[in-house]
Length: 156
Image (spheres, one colour):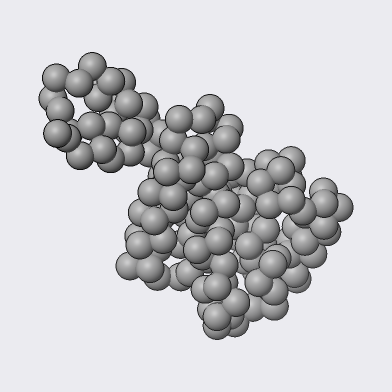
């Protein structure tokens, strides 16, 4: 009698244990850096970020562990966003970005999602995603001093 966890049983002689374990590890390794970066931007702290990421992976493996990679990816980011979203509104900011603009920028630049993935994952209209991205980028540009922009231009 073994314990089932993430699609694996506790038996060492179970033939399905190794392939599922390998697939679980591959998915975790492939998605962890981007999910962690996105959640870290949303919640602002190391410990809350770790807790949310672990819970998001557990939820995604429960909901879509045996699904194809696109469905797993969608389930993972939906879970992470749902868990991080309450913290987004409570982070004190010293810039002019709103919570939705900050989240869109985090989804694109930290999570590496395309506009079409954001539209699909979170059921936003593409025009909404584009407007939030442009508004956020415009605000960031306005906040950047000419000296910082010139220094960055000389580095690249």
